[in-house]
Length: 315
Image (cartoon, rainbow, N blue to C red; front, top):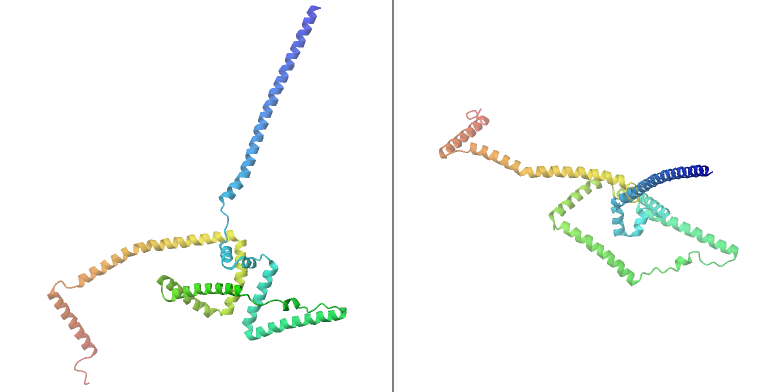
């Protein structure tokens, strides 16, 4: 009985130990799998962080694009002109561009007096028709709406002295700036700037021979409403081509500067060559100079005799 109990207890202990070994093995395998999974998760997180960090670094390293044309227009003409040229309000920009283009084309076809008369007649026709319509509608409905253009007739058109002074100061500042610059260029304060101004006027003579003033104004209007917006849309491509052109110009200028640096040496060599030739031709003493003068005189006399033969004049 005791031996049976010992055998049973031994069997239970062995089963317990085998069970513990199996559980230990399972825990070690599960712990290893957890470690591997954690490492994989960490690697995936690191890759995601690197992918998220790279565009941020690129955005930080990439300098923001600066539209110099827009900044210049805003500095000189204000935000309203920028909004108009860059088509911020499409309806407003379309109305201004179409009306201005129609006016310039009309002026290029008809005379100024005809254009002013036709435009005034069209405006008068529209206002008269609208006034007749509103008064007829008021008579039918028996209502007293008043004059259809009453708010515009009551509008105060007088300019206050403060506004007049402000506008006068702006105009005078612009006139003083441009007149002073013109005086500086015409009176040759700086010779280089005056030469540039002369070249500009010379080029303008050819442009004036090709186009008249209204054609230039039409081209300027179309360019004003198209080129800045085009540059804003395709700024990267245009800047890339401009950078290539700038590099080409820099290379040409460097080549010119290199030849310019060599120019004094070339001139020096040429001058020394011609001086040596002159020294070879010059007489060494007074007797040789007399001989050269006598030979020159004889050559001149022979040439005169060849042109006007003596003795045959009477014949």
